Length: 270
Image 1: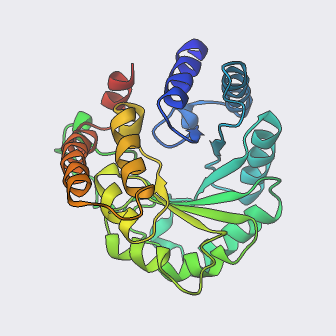
Image 2: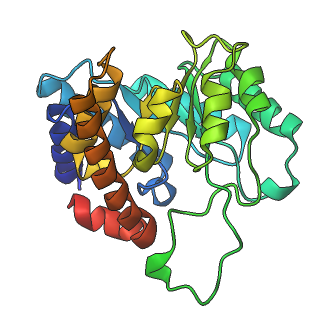
């Protein structure tokens, strides 16, 4: 498993990915012990360094249901070579969680973290239909019945140790309200999406990039869309047409990710 993980990490770095998330919700983090999580970070960090990508950022998923355990995991991840932590708000009792509770959770976690933290907001999903085949379920159901409003990002973005946010839902209005909020210092707080079918439009409203599954499979295409949009100040009609064509292809491919879910993502990566 280690060889597969490091081979894929090196492939992503060579293909233009400028940061890797380990132990995210599409990975096997929920099935790993804390010791195994730390070992994976160390292994990938060592492989990237040996391959000439010592400056490639590593972001470690640190999803637990408690403040103390999350802080411990963040600090262990930092010692293993991660530069940032990706923290998912607990979802088990999400429907009963207040905005004040989410704010208190993140503030409590980051006060004890030795690395900066990225907030992770997952989709608002309907109740699971028991008739739906397992293979057609979307990515793991997280934060069910809870949708984080832009005001929470405004509050938490002011904290010096909360530097990024990731949104994995399709409400582009929420993306725009956060990415364009004049009360957020966007030189210090950056917003990423989790769905590449939104890449072109969200970059237009101030988002900074994507952390998502399709880039693990069709890496160069997703990177090419990002580079064309993010690094072109005045896009001519030919370039615009090319970006639109690529975004169409990416969006069609992303529909397969949504349809088939985590297991098939791993088959495609393999």
